Amino acid sequence: MVLPMETKADPSRLAYAARGRDSNAWFTPAKYVNAARAVLDGIDLDPFSSEEANRVVKAKRFYSEKDDAFRKPWKARALWMNPPYAGAACKAAVLRFLEEWRSDSFQEAVFLVNNATETQWFQKALKAADAVCLTDHRIAFWNADGKAVSGNTRGQAFFYFGPNAQHFARAFAAFGAVILGRSVC
Image 1 (cartoon, rainbow, N blue to C red):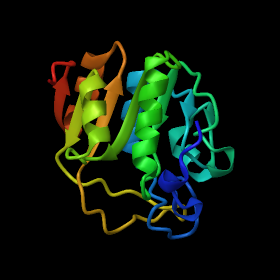
Image 2: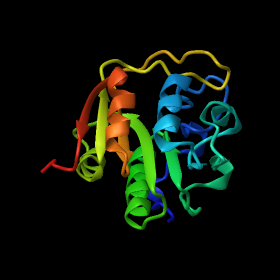
Image 3: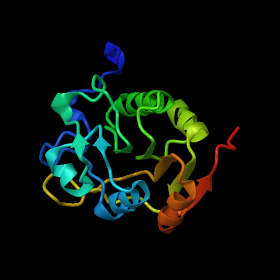
């Protein structure tokens, strides 16, 4: 899927682009990835990653900025996603995720995004997810140099898709309120 020109993110600002102290290169701390890995029984694919981020994620396969996840297949058993946040890239990544989920490209997945409940993409994901954890804190992400990134102004949400929603709820309850089921109208 090629993004229309007006929705393409500036590649120099993508969240998975490990460029020094780039404020958009925010990687997920290990405790959250470890919880996802436990729920998923391993991570087969991380579509928006880098060598640095994969040291924590430990996905069997990942796509870096140069691979362009929007053009690659997402076939996997279990998927982890912390998408790029710059511009319209997060929206495009979540919509691509939902498209791949509906196409049975993977069996289960966890993805992490800002708690942007007012956006259409967040609402679509909320209605499709098997479970969601709304964090009770702001995540202290880290950067490619291993230092904490300051300036996080929003809470986050972990979305779970798959048959193990109860397992997800137990694993993620330590991070915030968990909503189970697809009963959102």
